[in-house]
Image: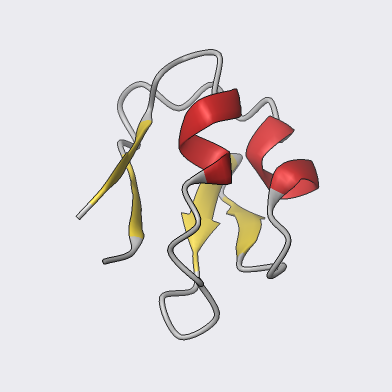
Length: 57
């Protein structure tokens, strides 16, 4: 599993970037972007996203 960002609903608030313990999320074109190689599948980003733009797949 890895975190998947819905670019259509991501607001670019960066809450997930600050929350990610693996530093797997960065910003790209003002939207969150997940590095799947670094993602540890913890789901922390899903829980804190105010736009509900992140899911685990």
